[in-house]
Length: 85
Image (cartoon, rainbow, N blue to C red; front, top):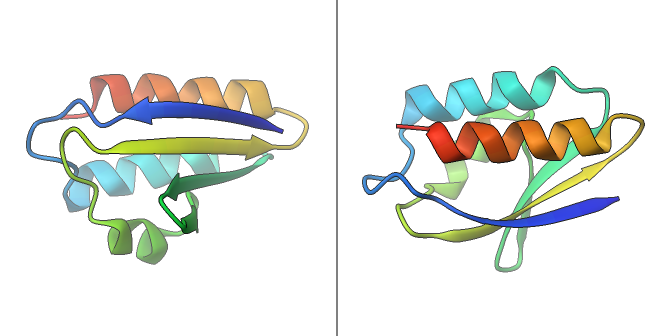
């Protein structure tokens, strides 16, 4: 299992389109991928779950990946979030 702490860099946070793209990114991997914020742990492959997080700019989160391609999954989500607008 890999846990990667990250920060949302987009000042406006993530709305529906970037969230949908994030779910697509997470869905490419065999590993289970979750986003943790505080006490919430949401499946990053679930569009409804991810929309419920209402990710704001500057917010701290942790990407958790577990499975055969966990390193690639965590790195892919990190790269996506670094460039999300």
